[in-house]
Image: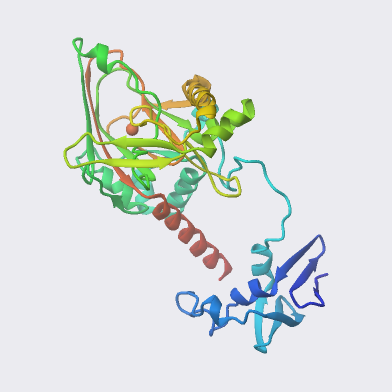
Length: 381
Ligand code: FE2
């Protein structure tokens, strides 16, 4: 049985259901009113600013009417209806405080165990079946990467992947970049070396949040792609040594790329980035483009370097990595704010040709969320 109590001050009300009690402030409710004078009926954008709401707004009365809560605000004398489902979904009366490094619902951390079930979509199917696309995007959001198979072996096919969910992010490297490797006995010593797993372009601010790599040729043995969950690595660091986690989260690293004429990209951001409430929101890790770190106090620099080394050792641990081969016509997408990628070493001669490009995660999430909302609407009709 649902009931509502208004605090005598009018400052807030409490909505009681069978197993919960959620408080809502008068000012919060008034600001989030959904009536036609407050919100545009078409696009849902707010039509008023906070300055249009009286500073001394309070709840005059609140009454339950079926699945609706009717609230009267004073001194405006304005009456606004709220759906109980909406209030339940937007409750903020939660006193729990999760530990630093918590991750959002829907994010699932992984290690090498995910190798048994690499999230994979069939490009031909995703292009014609919105249910399959929605499922694949959900996997990319959940795990921070996804593989695609059954694409065409043609130049520019990398853009077909981006077309599934968003837009290319052009950089000084162009709309796309080429990754060509000739592997032969004379350069095997060089190309045979794998790269350490990294996130791309931490010297950009903001970083490109999605990277797509599309395979067009692959005849050299070895050279598998490898991905590591940076969130899982950061959490493992926290669990092994909280001081190490904190020193990397609390101080900015510096990154730089000035390798081309007319380009000087610099950034000042932490390797482990947390939201103000401790949510793990991004990892930046790239030994090649880290610049001199100057934002760590002298008495913490030794700890900082020990923590950086330890995070690198966790990232290099094979128990953390998922590897897979890309055949021509196959591709993978990574959330570049979370998942590190690398190429393993080669063991034979041949060629490898990939085309890559960047895109943005907000577009990917928008496409996924819009598909979910559309599906819910259809289910309700
Ligand atoms: Fe890279």
